[in-house]
Image 1 (tube, helix red, strand yellow):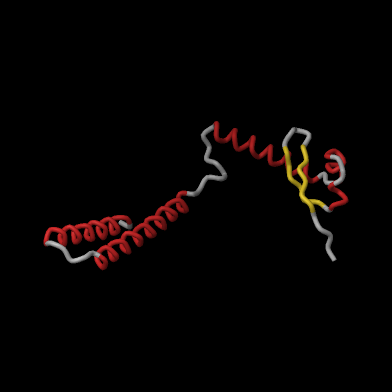
Image 2 (cartoon, one colour):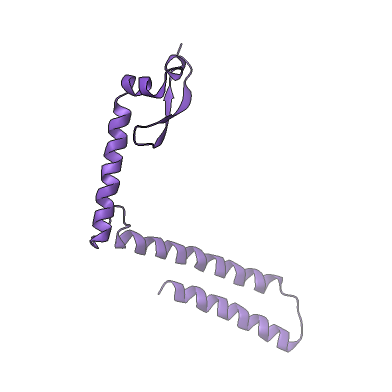
Length: 127
């Protein structure tokens, strides 16, 4: 049978707050005692702070971020959004055409124009 775990916020020596998940017996310890029992927390926090500082130095120097989205992925995301919008526009055009009541000649021409505009806009999205 596994023991239940509890979450607890601790304050690191640098003032940062960290949430840890520990066994109930450890949850009763003070922050300092918990850091002695779980020294890897401090190491992880220090490493994260060092990486953040390095990332900030790179940004200041104009270097690309390690976390930046590659151009290929960004382009693919834009294409996916365009395909989704294209699909939505075509569905809207079909619904407009199917649900439009019969009206005067001008009304029917207006509906036809709106459908053509939606279709043309959808086509331009993937060019």
